[in-house]
Length: 486
Image 1 (cartoon, rainbow, N blue to C red):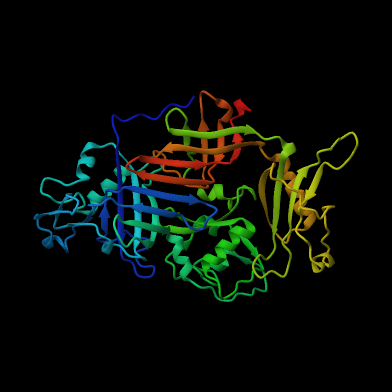
Image 2: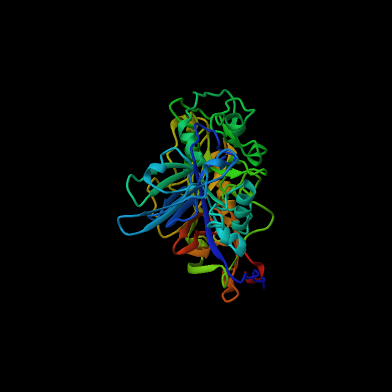
């Protein structure tokens, strides 16, 4: 039985929102010198899924929100301790100091950088400083104090930054509402050159600093070191010059289940990571390996972390399981063929009769050119089979130029090894863990141990505000169950 974390005597919910102007890719990585800082919000909602290139955030501020600015040696003389008070039309009295101001829609504009930290404070002295000190100055009067505050807010995973990106929409009336996209949003502004390779390309060729095409050069982002070390093969991928870098990465996700997302490197600098679906392989280029922050797997204790259990656990009958398999053959501007098949177990399979154990369904049509090259149709029917009552598991081969028959072998092998159990619904936990999508977590329920095991987080919605700090997890795939409960 896992021990519960030590419970503090109390916790205080806290957030820090930094907003500043940044031209082009300037200030993408470093802390801004003197940003606007807001420590009060009505609601923050962040949607994060490794399947989407962008994470999104919505921020709502209550009326009378106060913006603070960092006091530096440069602007110290301009920050006297004078106090101003104004009365709003609704009777609300707003008190501001020289280094603070009431937030208005004019303070925000599309294209500004935004960084959101959130967490729990347990140190009463830090919590007190989150407002103002006795001289009337904010706690952010030097970088060290700001750093102490950020560290005090840090969740158990060691990082309080839950969102980092750009404002893409602003309300033009109060209450103020901001729509944001993460740092990958900038990739929509970078167009690609026309690329018609004569040999196979790798992710490094396109995205690395020392690659041939350097598509990330203008973004301020670098290719993540873990991705760079994998040398992911893309085949003879043709890229048209009317596409942005974001278009290309989105195509990889849709057609080859090769996903891209923002992840910090060992020095805390945001990078672009590219990895294969968990259902392709478990090599170093898989989502799970790239998303790992440390060797410690986050553990969710049902009697401590869970705020609302909306899960339905069930064993999956392999008779109603199907593997949706696809190959990757020059996905953009391809002259080759991308195979797509679905494998299920033959309902009438009988080993004693020697009939076929598996059925191949819903194949994509094979071109005449592909047939001349040696491809064959594996399925025996052109009719579309309705698999809506089946549990469909996606699979993408990591082999460039794989044959139709070899894709079938891989799909069947994956079918045989798949851990046949599932989880439906969502699980809402408190914000202690600060989780991100694409990571592996360990669920532990002492009352109902049948669900204990390791799960892949497919999607996370993080909510922070007057109703507390919650994360709603969608975990449709069980990687493995705890052995004692199998």
